[in-house]
Image 1 (cartoon, one colour):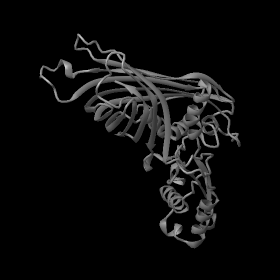
Image 2 (cartoon, helix red, strand yellow; image 1 turned 30 degrees about the horizontal axis):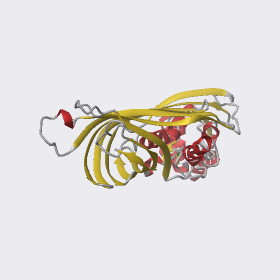
Image 3 (cartoon, helix red, strand yellow; image 1 turned 30 degrees about the vertical axis):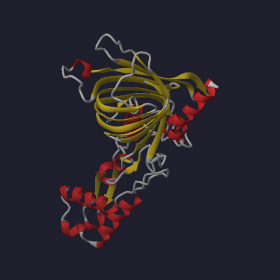
Image 4 (tube, helix red, strand yellow; image 1 turned 180 degrees about the vertical axis):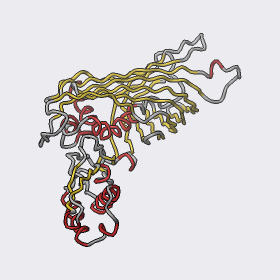
Length: 372
């Protein structure tokens, strides 16, 4: 049963991420620069989601009070994280010869920079469209660049304006092919994640120390064709309001710190941290309890990625040989977040929902058994 539950949660973690292809398969077609640009929005979104749902109250549990449940997160992917500008640094400049012998100027050699040839090179990130993008060669821009280079080589403008010469320049421009990078997104506008979670109170009744520890974990599972899946997170919060010398202080204030790590085979390893200040208010009536809470925090996400560069159609002029192992670290753009939420307790059942705003916005819902 434990393994079955783990597999269901892993399904939420991974299958929703990779779609029809694994992350490694998607990255294997890309050199490191474009792979980083492709996957950075995933790192940011994944970090925003994993750093959510750690708390549903600013008040720690009493001594040995606890809750056990699951947190489900839905990360909203901004439009500007669905595309990126394809890096052309691996593409060599194109050298062309322009025959001007018909006007008595012999031949001229010009060099076309890839950035000039392909000024609009927007392609999908991991969250972008699930169709390959076509990077079109800019015929007008290429023709204008050729004219500019010829003018610097002494070709008069009245010669360049001749229809015969213009036809030659346009023929050169039209001979340069469009690019179709092997980059396909998942067409995901929202990223779902889930995590099982348990917390226990460590408060000491005779002292002003009121705290709790929180754990997220899944048993290690071997996934076919991927490797071992490992997931562990832990943290805690310490109440600050008992140290404030105001009788019957009206709100709960706590400081929390949370760390977690997840790895998928040898391809994907993530580390996340969140440090947050929480404020909330609890109201309890026998078996019914309600509360509101909020927080501001600093967060960070880091991912280590390792894969084999193995394009379907290798280019013999590619500076990176097929079979090359590529490794890199990425830091997500998530740095600061604010959270607003509420929870409802019915006997021992606790339902919570909150909304976090940061690099990506996250809606979190929680369901569990809670004895405070």
